Image (cartoon, rainbow, N blue to C red; front, side, top):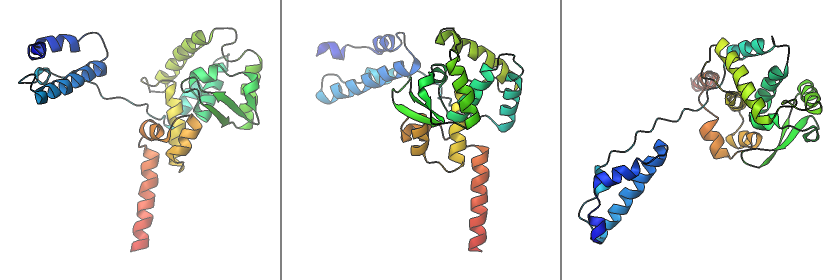
Length: 239
């Protein structure tokens, strides 16, 4: 085991910093630190060279922020100025259903029935049924019957076009950092504010309750106000 004892921090640093995301590089270093701790316990080396290598800095994960009602009003007002109303309809569908844009773009007429859309999600492969308000259901069904949202384009081309158009609407609404995924987060946050559990939200989004709790139930001003009211009512009952 002379080779293990001869490994230097410089060699480890070179390996750790090979191409990869910061999280991937940090994981490499963590594994090496654990490996050399094991080697130390076995007496194969005296020190842990991986401990002398600085860990890559990882930026904290930024989760989507729910849109405010004012931002939504500005976004829809901007989109509804278009002669082509597909993007305004897409925004309404994403907000009402929490669908991913890839799933929405791939809607087929046969998936629309009983005032809802049944689909197998693009990301997880799980099947979900999303109820829609009657007017929205009819509008989406009409689009699906006439070629779908892409309307003759490939789905990736349509999604890129949608991202560009929505970016302009987001900037006009004062939320430059927003993405289409924010509609999904907004819908989930509204459900949580109305008392839906993470498991129920997960059923709608086609994800686990744990993932729903972690990614889609961020603290919101509406939720804070609701809790403040509940706390005040509780205090009054005790007094």
